[in-house]
Length: 114
Length: 114
Image (tube, rainbow over all chains, first blue to last red; front, top):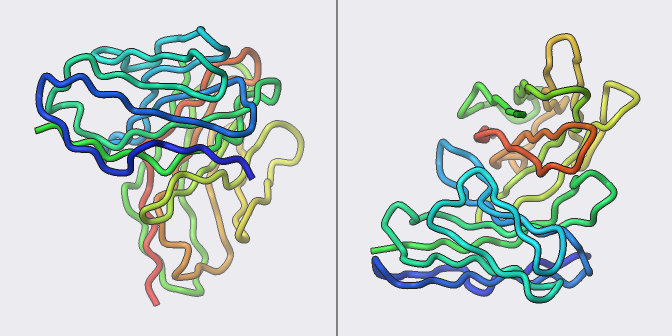
């Protein structure tokens, strides 16, 4: 089975800190995604990547950046954390050529910014 | 741009009764449609998908979904609900052509009462 691993399950940071959320997948997937999940808002796409060193903005990229230096790793960076970035962050991966379906998700990182 | 509407935040159903979780979509051209499920304290899991062909799609755990092009709907159904079906359900869509990421709905919380 595909495994998507997010480095932290819970994270507490202070306003203004630089925050790194790490995601690693073990199935050689080309496509990787970062979503945030908020009650009543569902899943919203932050950034995605279809190849190493490639990145595309999703629907809510403001305040975030990403890094994809290796195929298996996709990092989400909060340059200067703010309280409105308190959320559940979900990483996902899939193969191309099948239309991005059957995303495999990590367990999520619940980030609290105080 | 594509979008998904899940009109019910919460659906309550008695164990053994049939359940329906509603989803309508908007997309240019033909759609790829998906349902994902999130059990408590776990990541999202793929449940089923519609690409082409039979309008009734069968998925995991006895779930099925019916694609209705004229009503732009993709409702999730199960003939007999189990308490263990209690979870958060997300509908998602993307256009059939191209390689754009999935867009998710806001989610519907299903509670099955014993």
